Length: 157
Image (cartoon, rainbow, N blue to C red; front, side, top):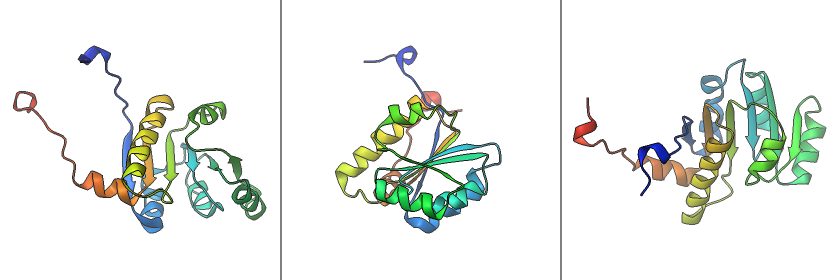
């Protein structure tokens, strides 16, 4: 069993949203003019344009070359890259100090997608160490709504 000195604790805040409306509502609340934002799963870049209005820089990615091609045509002033969101090394290779990450993986669903989502969030939190990760995943939001962080009576104020 790991002891307290062996555990790495990410200081990233995770914000779970369900649906595009909630996802986009977070933008003016969580993004400020100094932020450099990575967006995973941008599709055609519609949310990217909203993010770009609030931050210093945004790099939007999607696994689909077709989606990225369309996004580049529609929004030529924004930065789009073809990238698999599960390829954290590719995100590192972008060589940016990302302070916020937006993840839209709503296409994944079911129990296994919740595990994949948690794994993805932890990979990005541990490797890129952003202040916050905002994720659009109804399954994860439902799961998180039923979680309570236990505090041992000896650790309570």
